[in-house]
Image 1 (cartoon, rainbow, N blue to C red):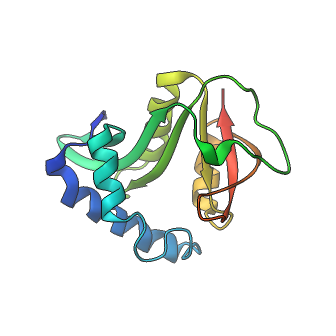
Image 2: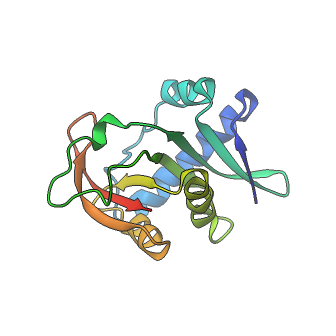
Image 3: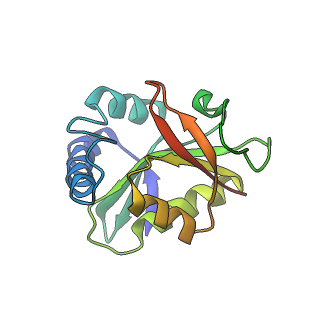
Length: 160
């Protein structure tokens, strides 16, 4: 599987993947994490322009999308009901989604992110049991609770 930066011409397909993911999440008991409009088009365009949006391709077809950057995430400054595993510099993955056609795609994206930095943080909604399982299966440890920019709680994970 090839992971590369998202290009402007990938935008429509990326938004389709997010629509597929929203439908899957709602069907899996997690209808509120992304609702019916997250992530908004403007945010994805910004991610692409900033060079922090990535896609995973198999045989030239985009299967997944995610945002990755190495640096400080302000939503991770305060953690409740636990602690981060360390205070070292870290990478972050957000907005990971796939078409669901190829088993293990999410794990490959997480592994790629971890290989970039060796210290990776991510968070997910308490109702997103599918993502919680993927994270724990791939060596991420639950560290506590953080709050997103809009104040909603998320379960914080880290692998180092």
